[in-house]
Image 1: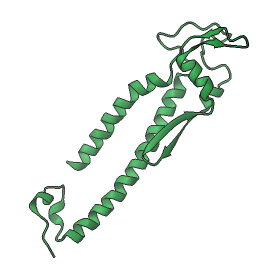
Image 2: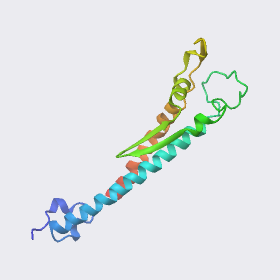
Image 3: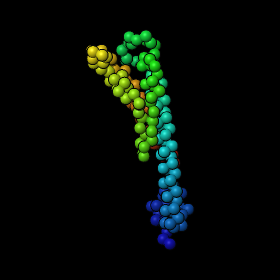
Image 4: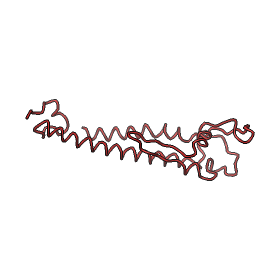
Length: 153
């Protein structure tokens, strides 16, 4: 059996392997562990982002236009249907955040000047999703990079 080259031995713990076969077997095991970690990380990320999005519904955010509804203290929470409809799904190596109330979510996220029966009601933009992504995604990426770096080094 061939010895493992010195540049491969620089990998964490590679010195303990006597052959490529043994090393290859360990790499396969590591790949399974990484796949499991990826699924867990994506699931936790999805759950976290959905919670952050849901927590913003019903709370007036800085920069929003004042509300003109019967519920001035709880904007975008008239029935709670939009908030309840936010979900996530892990698909392959991606986490998908979505809502069953897509049209309503888009109207509130970006605003519109042609709502209502006569298409002349203005709904100002009250972004929920974009601020969450802008704030949380960089933090999540840093946290994952830090964790992965600690495993590799």
